[in-house]
Image (cartoon, rainbow, N blue to C red; front, side, top):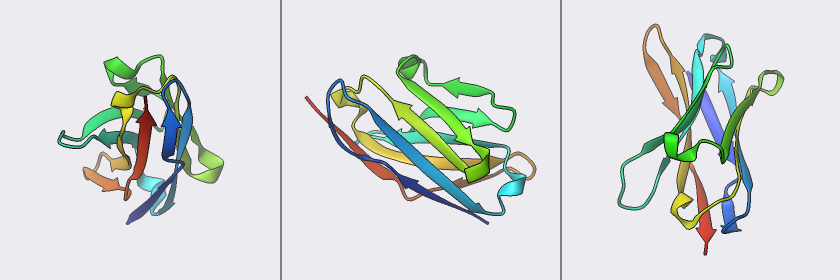
Length: 117
């Protein structure tokens, strides 16, 4: 099992920045990738960004240039730096972790990000 704990959410004005953190624990040696997803009220959960063990990253097209995903392997932590935030970025942000074989996914409890106009 893998446990994920997010932190760093909060209220920020439009144009501001936040950095989310996700600390992983448990059987993390088998993880192949980690990522961030978000879910706004009344909408489906959507991909924000992912990063693999070899530091290959993937971003939602609409977020490229404003959001950056990174890891600190020594701390078993993945980060999401969010800049130039917009009110439409308001959502619950979830950390996720994945194994390829067998295919499994793990999720954190989510952290609220609210961007005021």
